Image (tube, rainbow, N blue to C red; front, side, top):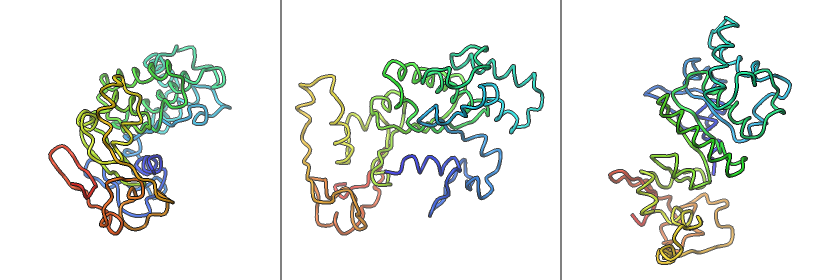
Length: 270
């Protein structure tokens, strides 16, 4: 799909092969091409695997001090105070700063990763599957932490997930991506209530319904499965091989993005 690749390009960790990325009207270069330090500070990322994103050889205080040092905080005492406050903000104790990553559970490690991102005082947090490696109870706790931090700090989130229930809980606007392209974009509530793109309908039908009787009434989508569907489609719509509504034009030309009030969709049906 390309979700993580897109997230890494937004954060400057990868260079786009084509096109440009803009933030608040300014073009964003990758870090390797000289992205401005202030732009780096304003856009931070929380990765999927909290253990892999933390250096096991260093204590928490060393890990959290690094962004403060990079942002010019030279006083060790001030750094320790800021780190202690941030640990408490994410639900950990100040004493945890002396521990190593292996001494924490998966959920606690993710809290440390969140604290590290927040210490740069960003405007945007890119959250790449931030709860998929956690159990259900811990997932709910981390999502609640994200909601609280957003209200307190006025942050924007780019929340990437295949968990549609988490997306519905966290996101005000939702973009559905297929084969490297946004095929539908709009308010989350509107898309859940009335999905337009056939792929969006398929995704939402894969979610276990809270009302099975009502769900059966809504199963009116036609599906196809051609050989090689979804792989190697260089012409036409990449979803054509799986779509029961496919037309001849879908196989020859990529559908343009049609824009409507509060909704965008890339499909010839519209």
